[in-house]
Length: 105
Image (cartoon, rainbow, N blue to C red; front, side, top):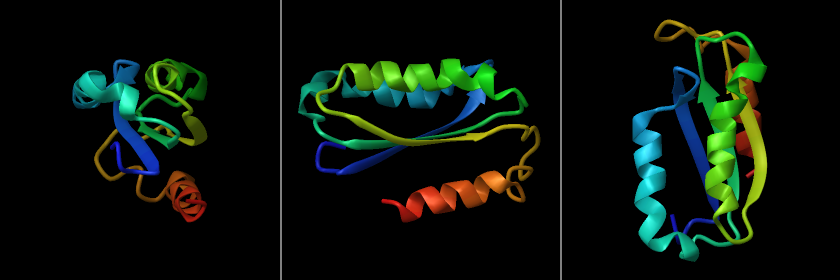
């Protein structure tokens, strides 16, 4: 993560927050977070919930991490909502949105 210019943080949303694995990854940065400087960040979430506003607390968790870093730039967020079962996100406009976001990197 320290050598990267761009970081994509992606997680499924469980009970209106990021997955435990994502939180562990963030927590593991604690020892060297001061070295994560001037990075571009993109956020991607996938959730069964249909209300985008309800997903803000997950994104706020990502932003809380960025608040601890020096010079982070939040470049984009994709809210992949309304996907309850495996594979449901595949044929949604969110996949194109993620693809387009990737082309901006």
